[in-house]
Image (cartoon, rainbow, N blue to C red; front, top):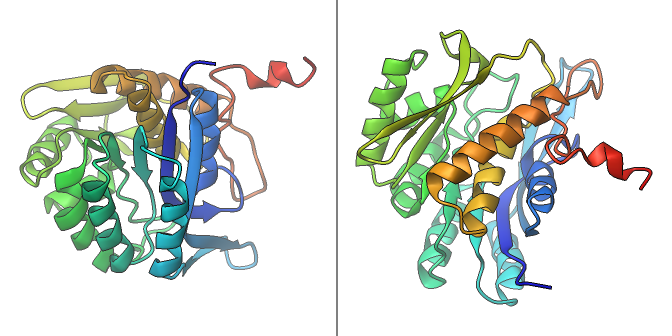
Length: 275
């Protein structure tokens, strides 16, 4: 077998399976890459309290031990981050990226859980901005996260996305892709990539569905897997857009609160059930 590319996700655990490291690992597998994980936090959702999210951080030393276990197997082809749990974990990651010369670094600056309005661990946003953005091959904020990173109160139009992307680029990220999604004030679901010089827009039809839990995690994980396999940033984002759109189209109702994307949709994994 030819060289299998290795991708690590450092992220929170979502037991409902649509988002977090579960989404990342499923996506890595669908891309034909080998996924590793280090759990930074465990997210639970209370069905008796309007599906409210509770975040339970993992001690940074335990996160470090997980990552050391992964790195004992040699060099990684990509690293993807999600919810990071604490400033100590963010500091740890910045050192590991430098010490191990990790080339393809995808920072998904998770600041809010889908369905929630409050920023999760707001102090972490500043640490991500200072310590991880300068080390990022690409950063993948949604509209809210892009506004937080860029210091813009509201990002909801293409022009505002471009302004935010330029400001985030100045903070050190080599590439920024802002996920427009359903919240964008446009007829299409548009993601905007900025490489410091050019803007590239990736369009898809807006899908009238709530089965999109984990779409952002999946998109970032797909970019990481694409980069690990040697794709250019533009090509990796383009395929990730197709992969995630298929996942949303194939999403389903897990319960009356959550409808996850179907990570197997792009490769028609359902056809493997009876094969």
